[in-house]
Length: 236
Image 1 (tube, one colour):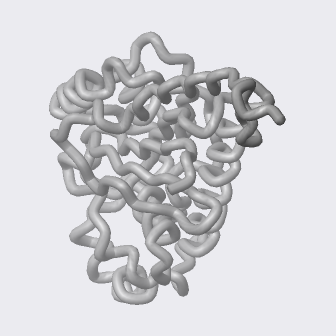
Image 2 (cartoon, rainbow, N blue to C red; image 1 turned 180 degrees about the horizontal axis):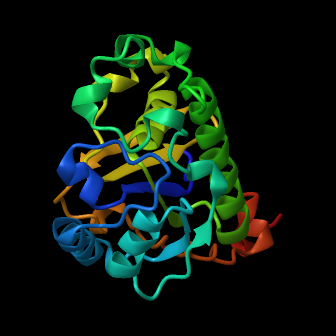
């Protein structure tokens, strides 16, 4: 397999909105105590990985997650990784939204969903996929094909990126799960993307570090006559 850079997609830790059953959207909700614990635990798993680059959604819950998980990192804000714009749905209880006529569309045909005063899910998927693919090419060019890099984003955004990597229609992305503080791993090869891990919330990540390549031994110098089958003893 061609050696390529490896993307670690991390979802932010649990927020106060997650705990209350609300749709946060782009509101400045912060991590709750559980979310902070999740972020710290994810950091313990990420510790030791030679991350070439860390990028993040601009929303505070992602930045808080990285501050706790990777305190020595200097994340770069990537607007393409921001949460879907849910418009007037933002801040509403999910129980209430489940009664909206748009809810079945979001669940069964998300590619057709356009949120009132907000963003189309298809547009969210398109800009998120474009963002990670662009960053992956940039990281590979700057740090080499064996580089590891991390992007911190949101549940629906990560699910859309995974759907693209799997080559499945956006209408199937609700079958994918991205839990708070989970890590999903993708490698974008010239042939196709490979989903290496999905929704990993506790596994050892050290195996993602590529092994160091062994140096090739220099070829032994051989007498030029012997190379063509003629040694000193066979001269005529």
